[in-house]
Amino acid sequence: MPQGIPALASSVLPGRWPYGKGLPASMTAYFDEAEIAILTAWRHKLHQFPEVSSEEAETAREVVSFLADTRPDRVVTGLGGHGVALVYNGAEDGPTVLLRCELDALQIHEISDLPYRSRIDGKAHMCGHDGHMTMMAAVARHIGINRPLRGRAVLLFQPAEETAHGAEAVLADPQFTEITPDYAFAIHNMPGLPLGSVAVAPGQITCASMGLRIELTGKTAHASMPETGLSPATAVARIIDAVKTFQAGDVIAQGFRRVALTQVQMGKAVFGITPGSAEIRMTLRTPASDAIHGLLDDVLKMVRDVAAEEGLALVHSTHNFFRACINDAEASQAFETAATRMKLERVTDYVPIRGAEDFGLFGSCSKSALLFIGSGMDRPMVHNPDYDFPDALIPVGAELFLDVLDQLLGVQR
Image (cartoon, rainbow, N blue to C red):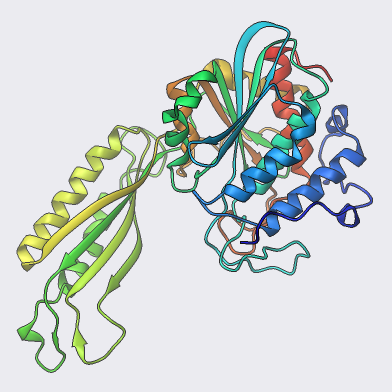
């Protein structure tokens, strides 16, 4: 990673904003083409210098620098790691409304011919967090001039969303107690939905998810005498087969559960040695956060039984616990109202989804809502190496946020 992210060059600013087909003209209520061009160039800049979870120091500094001219009343840095919160106070008392985006990228090698493709080998913004940050920057640049009439707006650039550690670390940080929100809102782009469409509803939005790592240990042997060792191969095969028994339901509802194998590794890449150890990784998924512990107990019982029968030592660990996102009815309605005002296409049969998002934890301290905004029907899925956030969503997502702020805090156009 270079020391600092280079200054934004005027030569990279596009000459004209390419409005997406079918997107509403209402986006111009807040942003003109010159402003969107600046924001688009900044998104491309962020895209070139990705930082993965818990390593977002330069990205955080770039956020503070780029938005310094918006004159926040308070800048909180080092929040839950490298998190940044910009606070904009209204003239009168009122609620605290938090808008959240994510700083982190993924450990994926980008496959593209884009002029602004990642310059960091093996790291890339393949989930659209660069676009989410730019939406938030658009909000900041607007309310820096058009302050809330009441309450306060907190714009949170959260670290480590991809590992599920970020929200937990932010909420545990003593600095957060001074900006604890009454309401919290987040937007995530979603390929497979029409460009600029939205999916939001009260209640269940995402599932809970947890990673499980299993390590089996036996004894290596010469490949000519495998009987003198203790291979985990049979146990691995049994566990892989047994995982199929932990699938229940096709729709997110009571009793739904999923276990997905994500990695199996056994032995060395040689021909003369039988394996003496193996590692299995899997992801567990349930609708409710509490229910995932019951699924974990069931999977671990199966694994322990297999390990004992095969005479293998067993060690396990859990990782990346994403709580389920449950939208508050009032907060969800604020998004609904914004989408209606903007005349955005609605997708009513999309949520809840099987995916996970660590924004769900904000529901423990506020009335929270997560909205999905369509990235297009033919765009690669997030976490794919050829994914790229559609720039046409920058003003749409920003206006959704600003409309919510207008409803709750009186932010003017």
